[in-house]
Length: 441
Image 1 (cartoon, rainbow, N blue to C red):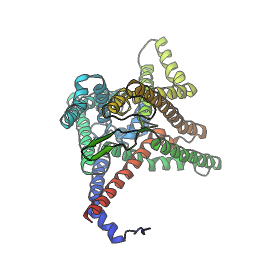
Image 2 (image 1 turned 60 degrees about the vertical axis):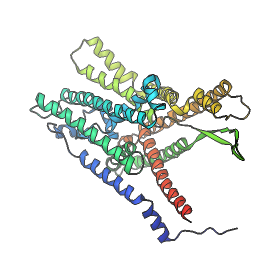
Image 3 (image 1 turned 30 degrees about the vertical axis):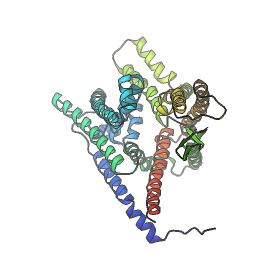
Image 4 (image 1 turned 180 degrees about the vertical axis):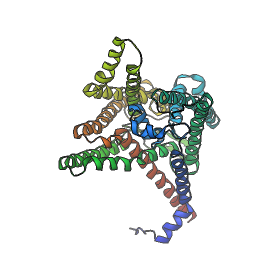
């Protein structure tokens, strides 16, 4: 048996340099530094003192502020963050599955079609940014968070253009990171936005707990629950169902190709964090609107209905039940629109290339079998994701340590997912370098 030679320090340093990994990492860190610098620059005409002390921002804005690294709460030039671009990308995915012309661009026109879809996504991002910045600035105006002199019309338009330009600049940074750095640029910027808030969470928690022994025990319990949740998230992110595929043998001349068994991996959590984000947005958006309506000049009966929905129906145990059901439903919905989870299309491709699932006939029987497998996998994943989403929130409410509420299930899943992807990207570069070294020998 040959001995395995461990690489020396010089070999590791040379591999690091030759693979270009250091340059990619430095470039990624430089883009992150630019992003964090822009977060600190507020737009003109915002009453920052009122903004920081009033607590009027609302649950929806507070939730969205988690993903912007505090930029939304500060109303900086990057206040909208990467959100409009993510939303535009998701909507384009949905449209590509429903509109034949867009589906053709995605599947049949290759790289040129994908570039067109990317361009459409950018245009749509501009439209969403203008709309969201208008709504956000109008919301601030209604809540009295603008500067005492108010914002004239031209200044208001300028602020909209500033927020839109900030989003487009962040989108550009994200694309640069994806092309020249490490990992998915949009995910990394969201990840950085979340972890940038962790020191403030810990500081506020330390002030709350102080020398209170009972609160200290509750904090230890809460941290233990968070650690257990992290373990469950890692399991959910990495777990998959592998369906064995038998490939047909083809003889070309004297050579035989194929015949090697492979597998199709179906992830237990195909939607990632998207079902949770959509569920929270669906619940918080009406709550925010209803809270504003309850303060507006409207008939007493309508105000009472708005207060009941906002304070009773969408709170307490009913909130968690609706939240759980939304996550389960949205997980199934998101899985149903993913290109790599379409039973009929997978079955047709297998039949086209002469491959099959052992013991199952090609065509419709294969599609039915895959549909049954995907339904079971998605159901288990949806239940697991729903439980993971509920645990941190329930634990926070039970221990009454709310400063750590920002590190909820959504933030934890994003952090774990991006961290795993980042590590896998580094491994890929190192393995590629080892393969290059092997070919040169």
